[in-house]
Length: 280
Ligand code: C2E
Ligand code: MG
Ligand code: MG
Ligand code: MG
Image (cartoon, rainbow, N blue to C red; front, side, top):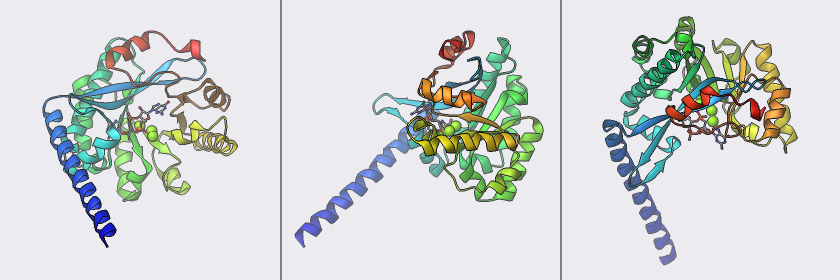
């Protein structure tokens, strides 16, 4: 009985720690948003034939002076839970569009900057307004902006999700289905979603060279996407072997540490001035 009692109290201690940790993090996140401590980094999307950069994905970064680096995988769900995603998500869209505007002014008029949307953002009534504003303020074309959404975001209310997507699509904004292959959406939905691009989840790309099944899955996704008139981006490309496989299968764009980690806007601008032709 004593052993059980100890276990129970450890369990409570762990729970309390977890709750305490979450409270602290929430407080810190609120301060960080108010204090502009969050930054957007940019990871290039590269053409497999030339190594040219055709776009960037904006990824949020939070370096806390005391806690160190905190991953968006940890704090974005927290921001969702607490409602902080509203102001934060708005800032992400406006800032990414502003940066896209800088690049367009430098002459990169075809560049696409992708923003990840969280589930709450996607169903927010203000989203369309914020996106329109971001385009107007920055002077970019709608085609300079891309939205990355995940299958799970679409499945809760398929019909209204399709309406939201159609609205953006008509405006000329590209929509990418992120982490493709990890969700539950059926292929019949895929046909109905007005999306432009599939992003193959990096869990499939990681084992390309060593796992024959993954290689077949990736090849099949690429073929299927092309048959449906969609572009395909592979995320998480880390090795030359993976790059060559995807290039051979006519994957449209590649993204991953093999080319570049997500970098600051300043470094991203430097990357734009050269291409990755040396890595192809
Ligand atoms: P995601 O949208 O699927 O982003 C891809 C993640 O993979 C990023 O992690 C990126 O840094 C990482 N990655 C890219 N290339 C490689 C590679 O070659 N190898 C490996 N191992 N990883 C690679 P990150 O930045 O930590 O973001 C994690 C997730 O957090 C994102 O997944 C996205 O769902 C979310 N997230 C990030 N930024 C934002 C944002 O601004 N808004 C929202 N709503 N979500 C965001
Ligand atoms: Mg993404
Ligand atoms: Mg992804
Ligand atoms: Mg992913």
